[in-house]
Image (cartoon, rainbow, N blue to C red):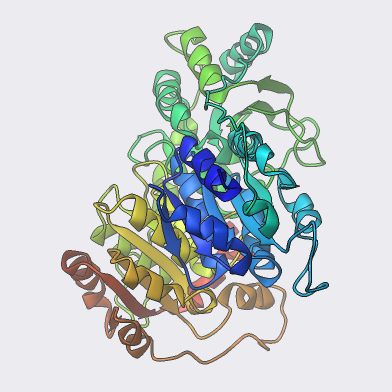
Length: 543
């Protein structure tokens, strides 16, 4: 059997559905083997688009997303996405080609040491030097990518190895690995701390965003009666409709939510991930913290939990729920009294009719237009904070944002992956004009795939978040503004449908009509960012 055929068999054994990518001449044997496979090739217009889609597939399914590129410039275009998946905790396998390793007639043409380049950005990076090693290397790559903490892995398949004839091969069967449970003493100590607390809070972080955690965590929240809030990447793990939900920590400090956080004497931190900006800062003699996670805490100056419950999060939370008394003696009512104040401050401009639209109105109208199970994929920009803070989420993984690498250009391909995986659900990409233009060529891919997708571009003709930081530091407004194409004509040129919002009242009906019509729609919605001043610490303290 040809080694590339064996590679495809090993991927099929792992249940791979899609390979996202752009092949090159070094991948031609692999591409030929893929023709007869059940795995679908999703050809993209840039390697970044492919890898962002693969990472999002991993994020949404928990199964490793796979992407393909050639050597040299194709592989180097994966670098940002490798960091995106690694920091975000999304399982992804990158397959890249390489010149023949046993003989070459092209010298160093296009040759970069891709394996060494990928090593600091991935959990594992290896070159395949023998076709017979493919099954074991593929099985190991998927195991590494998916085990906690999930992330990126890389395999390099040289051109001559791909063409080898392999004898006596063996496919390694997939088997699920159980994660160890937390020790009984740490669970018992956690219960004692919870029982002793007068104003406890639950914080849901990115690590709790795992399918097996959802049901036990909701049960724990409901039984304990302890109010909870979440980080940006923990958004939606427990529904915002829960009367104990306080809000999303969209900023590091000084937001209205942090007044409640500062009142707590115990924070039960479930799924803390150090890649996210900390939603609270610890100090000596301050709030006690219980760290519940798959891995021990990375201790630093602002995070040094007094108790760690290390093991499978779902199992830990389920056991804690069983150990809880029927009623806790505490005074969380004081915390819950702040809930309406938080919502009042956050939603004070939801119905503002000014145009260009305020970010609060854009978020509120998007929520009004979308179904509860709709998925929005946020690119990175100022609007991300407004959506994280204001957009109500009823189900897990219905707001996809990147609060780890926080890279621009990921929103559109992430939404495309979701539209591919969930064709019957509403999917909307939310991008700034800057982030959209970084991978806007993938609109052709979306149209070719006949996806049902709405792309909302909030336009301010500037790199708005950096401009906000510039203003916050009292610096001159300089160097961050640009011009945009006509997005309606741009959409039309790809065979998509283009729309420009002309007044605030038409925004919600427009979103609804786009989804009703189907196909790929681009909406150009001018935004007025003057409200960003409300997010400066001094304004937040006075809110």
